[in-house]
Image 1: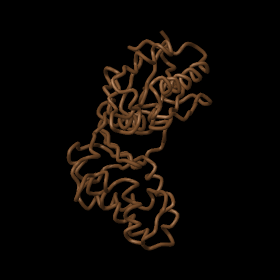
Image 2 (image 1 turned 180 degrees about the horizontal axis):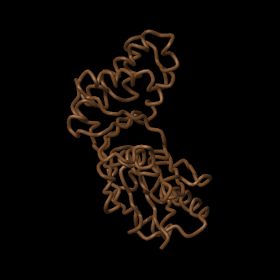
Image 3 (image 1 turned 90 degrees about the vertical axis):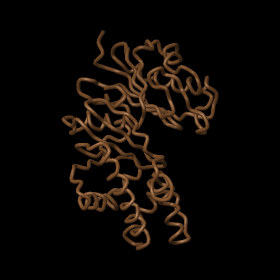
Image 4 (image 1 turned 180 degrees about the vertical axis):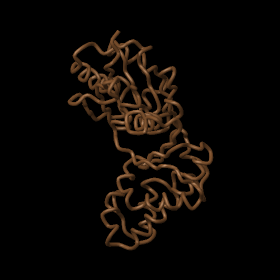
Length: 284
C-alpha cells in the first residue's frame, strides 16, 4: 500500500475543509483544498452526506486511490472508537452516539481502521510543530484564541486537547477572560459602544485610548493563564493561534515581556499555517 498521499479534513461547527496531504513533504497538495458549509443542526444523514461529498470530491483529485483519512474534530468525542458524544452544544447533536468511522467507511470505502479522528486543538498544535520550522521540538503547549479558548499539549509527536478552557480563573473561568466575548463585553463596559468582533477593535487601536487599554488588560489575562499552563507542563515553546492572534501585534509584546518578568523565557511562536495546521496535524 502506498500511503504517501493521505486525505485530511478539518470539521468545524459550520464547515468541512478537506485536502490531499503529501506525507513525505508534510505539505497540503496545491489545488486539492475543498471547503464546504455544513448545517450542524441538520439530520445525521444530511451532515454525513455533506462531509462525504467534500471528501469524495477531494479523493477524485488524487492520482491513485487514497486509503487513509485523518480528521480534526471538536469534542466531546470518543476519538479512538470514533463515536460522537456532542450533546447540549448546539451542534451535531443528531450524530450523538453514532460511529462516525463506520459511517465514513460506508460512504468513502476507506477502511474504518484507516480513519483517524483526533481533537481539533491537538491537531492544530501537532500540525504547527511537525509541518513548520519547529519539528525538532519535543514538548510544546498551544493556545487558540477565538470565540472560545482552545488549549493543547504536544509531546514527542503526539498532541491532545489540554481542556483548560473551563479552568478556574479570576472571578470565573479562563474562557470568560480570554475570548472574543470578553473583548466585546469589556469594550462595551468601558465605552458603552458595541463592535462586531476583535478585528473591528484592532482597527481602532491606534486612534482610541480605550481600545489600547482593553488590549493591555487582555495581555495581562493571557500572561497569568500562560504562566499557570507553563508551570504545569514545562514546555520548550508556546504556540499561539486563532482569529484573535491576527491582532497579536497589539498584545503579544506585553505577553512576552510579562512572562519574562515571571521568569518564563521560552520561545513564543505565532501560528503560521492557519487552517492547514489542523489538516496536517490530523494526517501526519
